Length: 127
Image 1 (tube, rainbow, N blue to C red):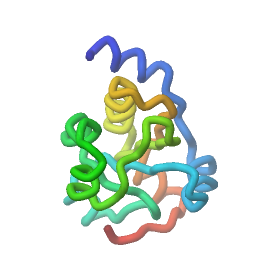
Image 2: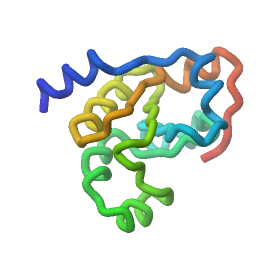
Image 3: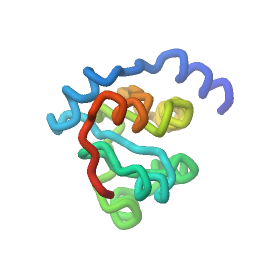
């Protein structure tokens, strides 16, 4: 897995604020926030983002659709969906992208996260 993670990080496109802001409300991406639940409560979330803490992601993608829905309260992304991972500053998002790619997800990109979103005046919501 370590080799796969390195390869995925190299191949993963990183988005800037303008790019992610343009996609947030389109319904064309699945925005996954990989921070811990308490971080989302304390800092807020980017609109439309769904929380799967990084430590749960590898298990989450192995769940069947019903188990995933029950655990995370949203539909399990398909392996062909356009997924954008984000965290607070970026490193966990790249790890998440690696996990997803290793799990068969092909269209995964990364946005650094909530700090950049706030710096650029992005709207926040409560989880």
